[in-house]
Length: 232
Ligand SMILES: O=c1[nH]cc([C@@H]2O[C@H](COP(=O)(O)O)[C@@H](O)[C@H]2O)c(=O)[nH]1
Ligand SMILES: [Mg+2]
Image 1 (cartoon, rainbow, N blue to C red):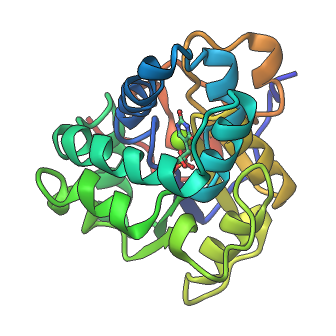
Image 2: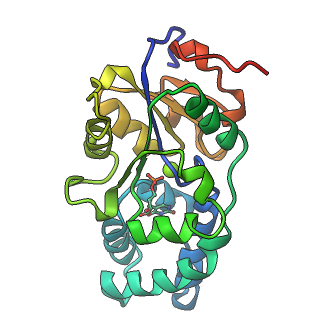
């Protein structure tokens, strides 16, 4: 059940794919483009299992679940070609820019906790979104960070991302923003509250672990978690 009361926090951690950027739509297109020649479908059910995992975990699972005649490395090489075409024109999702700028203006420490690799982050950010992402002084990129041993739903990435803030907040001082079920599980496992903005196709039964579920980041009221309210 969604909690009716929330605890105040001091630090905020953002997921990236499907939360700040519309890259989840692009992952679906990229993977389907790879699978179509093999007569396979990238179902939403399979996608849900993979969202938030690290790139090598994703490749291994897709190859095994769909019994592709490829090694995970070959799948990753094909993915790279797709990502290079699709990611540079990704767009910012509603409410993300306003919220990130609000926290920045009010000196709330914010960190990025994405399972993407550094290479994939750069494809998504460097062409159009450098200014926005420059507002994150602390970035953790799970797929290329040796400290992040396991992908979401394990808590590793959020614990590592929290440890990168110079004042080392406790998990209960951190609020996570996530779109994926695996991301919500990871945040909860790390002992953090989590605001979920799920894909509308996700069943409400599967959003119950989130502290708060929103349709869009535009709906978020920072004061609910003891953070400075919007003034406009
Ligand atoms: O359809 C998918 N979307 C996303 C992922 C994985 O999820 C990560 C993004 O997770 P996050 O939202 O935590 O940044 C990507 O790097 C990718 O490995 C995936 O496997 N399949
Ligand atoms: Mg995400």
